[in-house]
Length: 449
Image 1 (tube, rainbow, N blue to C red):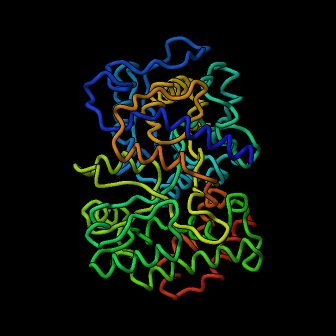
Image 2: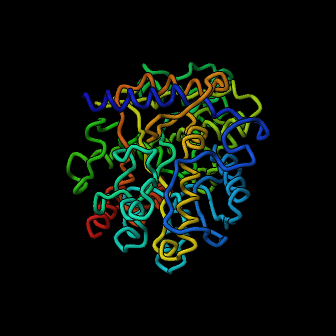
């Protein structure tokens, strides 16, 4: 309980300072908007005057990600100040992105620097020795990531070592389109809303001619996967992987996905949920055609960038049932910047990669990227709350009111092992494939890793 309260306090303190999320004029005096790279923590390089190089970099700062523009601005400033170039292949954080990165490592075409998940998704290239640990980097660059708390960097499940430097953490919650709720004559769900009450609300919204829930089960089913399973567990048990579909955890997975199937059968998802992309279903939410959207804290900036009426949107808790309180949320620090072994062994790219990550994880840029999420900064982010949008302020209240938190259990399952459930979600909700068999396949594949 003390650990939980300490974590929640940390998040609350972090988000209370995360005021740099509102859209800002790139020309204003903000981190990453000047013509120089942000002031970074000093990094002692053992070599002098490295050659100018082009770094191959991939991240998830793309598409509707709220920090996509911040990232592009920061890269441009780093290129200008160093004379180096970035060949950027960033794309939306989805299963396709994860598969592409893993395939690149398998074929020897991995990027020099990647912003990627530090859980089991990175196990394959960590086990293969294709990325460099922070301890090894510090043997040459003692100040590398020295502005971060080592205990919050996100150690690899493979060997407990730190390989990546995080920028901002996350929480997941339910975004709400107020106008749709008002037109349907329903109250916006809050901390006291139960699962059964939520179902009644969804039916009224559907009867009013709107899609209750914006989600692409074809491409981004994982948010509903997490919360639906969470509803049959608790903050202390959510991260325990099942051994099979008959134990307590396994039954929770089966029951949770059956709830997603029930929501589909009741018609609470958009008509294109089995074929549409995440961008398409998010647009339904923005265009006042859908009421609810489960997504991460990064979506605050994404929604700010997609609408001219940010006050029409808020974020609230995903209604719970069983041992999970509605105010128990999903959150944590799960991604960071890695340096590939291939770049590290290139004398010129080594220095550039270290400098690039040092710049991108400076206190100033992390503060700008953090939005309403967590960071590992020793000094905490520096923000101006007066610049927060109403949605960002609601994000602060969301975290402050949380009673429990668990990290996403999907992070414990390698990407390739999720296929029977994640890629197969359309077939599960339509009854073409058996839910218990699909889950057992996931568990068997994971156990065989």
